[in-house]
Image (tube, rainbow, N blue to C red):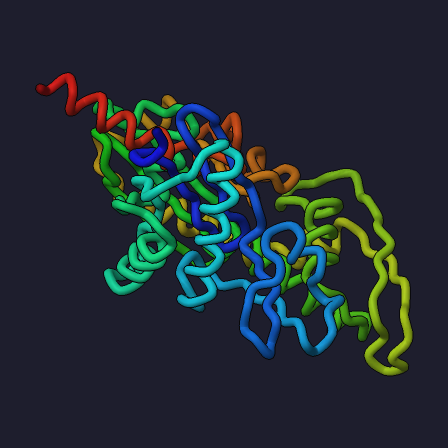
Length: 335
């Protein structure tokens, strides 16, 4: 009965999510794999592999097969998708044979990058692969009226890219993609701690710092956090204390890049749709949208209401899953 199943996949730089109509969100795993360096086989993926970052022997390598929203390692991505399909099949309680898959791509992706995503999903066992632009998927997942002649503006701050899109009549009217998102913020924190304190920290620690004391560019009550790392000079473990003001300064460049992308998109928006955006505002999705104070800061600088989507981490996956059924329903009505 599942031979003609339809699933939506959000193949993200940071997380891969799978959505089905009947079961809802089926899988939400980090896009990380652990491979055996000798056999090149995947020994762990998702949350299990993420916990291994920075803690593995030389025989195990941790790989993030996507970078900046596109495939960096085709073979590993294909293997990862096969494992995800198998996991989805187990959760559905049946063999997921040759499903039709809707998968999202960054709006700024080249035809070669889109083809790579399509081929990887098809080789993982999909019968048919339909590509969908990320801003449209995020807007559908956030419950915006994308098929109506009303402008919906979405800002999807993911791991590798930030997607800004203005959608009307089911299509992208204006868009911008910048490679400034969650991963860039983590890299900036790692670089700052090394430069300022001569202490090395890993990606998981940098991400935890961002989530705990990271703030958008607004006044706030200063918070502090103790972090542990390795002293570059002595090679010994060291604990240092960071303030939220320091991290706010570190994140400034990434946040201003995102702001410029939003402004650039608004500038090329047709005048008739600009009024809708003033009325309905901007919707934020993606993991990066959860940064403290981000909605308030963006609202103050672009002078347009800014709100968080109901399920910011899952919006794109929900949108890819729902999109197929929306188009299918329209086809049935047309007939």
